[in-house]
Image (cartoon, rainbow, N blue to C red; front, side, top):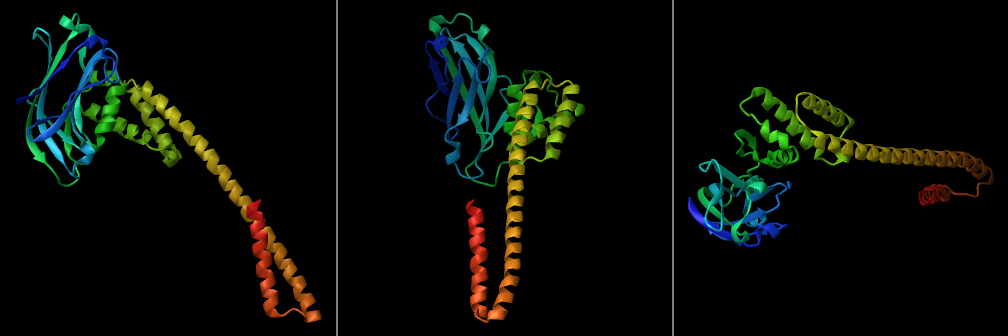
Length: 302
């Protein structure tokens, strides 16, 4: 790997927001590093991420397979952190435009920083570069030794960030765990949908799976809250749709009554027309058409 970036952060302990590096090149690609001094979705660890620059501007099917390493050191050059598994190759693509570590280093381990300065070095080796190709949504990526498709990456990241126990219990070689994990992933994907698009059966299955996973030892209080929120929104939407259906039924009923009144009036007019012979057939049809449409228009306005 070549050294691609050295980023010095002054007044580190005073930084609360994300620190972004300038764009830099390595292996024919543009990169960006984001440092979260107070953590990303956590408050007790420093977080580090390597991003692809402007991924949405790249062509369809782009991907990069790269090995990278973060080295965190103090003013004196003492290494505080170095990425584990330095030989591991990561797939960067449209579905996964960044990789990193949410819990890079506990803030308590930073201790006293000489001159309150931290240096972040980034080493990168690009082993595959594709500018354009077929969709990468079904490409396989490795997440903590567990093989998943790229389109599942967001759901997996959400699970890990929400449940700190998930990483501790993550044992991909365990067949039991793999089965439970697939249920968990499906549950997260279901609850990521719009409540209006879900059916009563899907919500019932989600509650069943959540109960089974909780009984299996997964700590999913955060997901239970999400299920309650989605269920409430679904009930509101269902009630609203039920009211709309009832209104439509009432409208149809009113139109049917109006049409029935016109039929009765038609018979009366026929009798009168035959007796008086003053209304022509065309006048009679024209009269009925106007009468019916005026009736419908008056109803819709109300």
